Image (cartoon, rainbow, N blue to C red; front, side):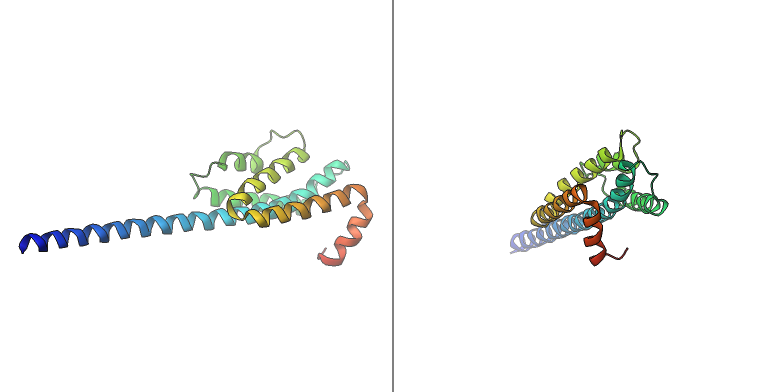
Length: 160
């Protein structure tokens, strides 16, 4: 009788400890996923600001100070989140795209930002990532082919 009681008690303690462990593990994973999603969304905002920086560089104009400030601010917001995502394999590449001076042009930096968005997008939401990539490609093609038409259409739906 005593042996049965002790076996039951030990089994109960082990099950309880295992449950607590797996609950904490699950909560940590969820927190990491939420942080990664925030990084992803801020990278999208960063790409938006960078798009205007890169397009001015292509035209031989200096960067717009408002877009440069937006890029800088988003970069530091992302860096703050990355401190909590130490296990992220893309951490080094993200840090480089945010602060690195190794890019020969802003077009190169823009390509790396897009690559990182693709990698993170596949992890977070592959269908949305594919759809937004298609939208971006169509919009970029229009901008290259007919910049005035691009602006005419953009002004209809975006607050500028």
